Length: 426
Image 1 (cartoon, rainbow, N blue to C red):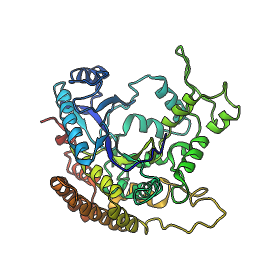
Image 2: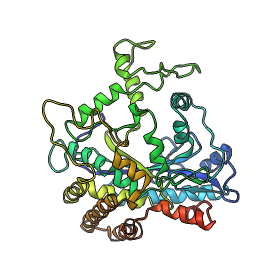
Image 3: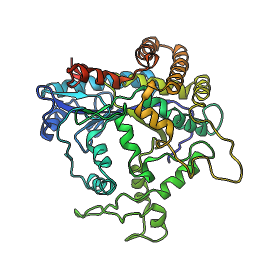
Image 4: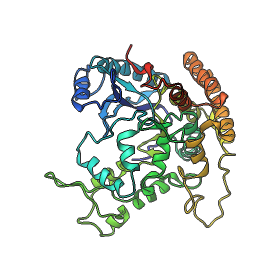
């Protein structure tokens, strides 16, 4: 179920946005205004809940809007479909005097609150509150871009284990190159990607990565799922979805808990796990901050080019090796990282979140990955414009040791910080 085998073909993105009042951005947006904008959309599909190109919309606990594109055959189709649906989404919100803001954390000093009272989110709030403020900040004050690609073949240049390894190794470069959350509550935090820093401080049983460097990723993921704490047990009739603190799914299978778990419980448990790369039949890369405007296109193109082109994948792995050198696996013994720090709590992930591409090693690796992706996009028919967009980003940001977060910090220092104007609908 989690690693469906087959040649890489499909591409998708999940794009999250903060909702701001166009006239008074610091004012909280009442949920009814967001719902009014959503009701005005030209929804269709078999169930009447998808946008014209097939994207689906959901609301996050703090009122963020998430657009999930349909799986598209190839990168260019994904970009076209998502752009079309985002145009409709922006127009609907503009008609309500609202704008969509693409940034990894809400940059404005405005009240953060839970606007959804679904039992799942109430259970998440209780679970994460026991370990500090990070879970509540994540739920109500962060937004991301997720790139989704097929898991891969059983073997060969597109083998699952190779793509799994590359997706994890690429993580720090994606955090650094696209860091876009230097502010929280209107103030600099000292981190270019505050969002990533927040995730690194939450429940490690569900936010760290399985040890990705050696062995079968399916085995690693199975152990990870079993060892993760149960966040909630679903109950009928309005009863709270509580779970005993410290109960892992392995414990539940072995007789702990109020009742035996079902297959549906296992399926739901998997949806409450949030590692940097989550297998859901496809690979879902979760470490990228939300981007302004159509900035989401660049990380989607970069990731797809590097994972789907075997030559680019080889070049990327070589460039990423100095960041976290692979150590030979000495049998018998656990995979590297089984007992030590794992992403996103390793040194390179911390540097990526704090310094971004101002870090010389991360800058070199990022530029090498952009160069490899450029070559791959050059051989993709019809991708000339997309290739130019990716190259322009590389020149504007990593080539100069900058990331989108630096634009926010520059605007704050200049006293011009508001929600980004490019987020307003045309």
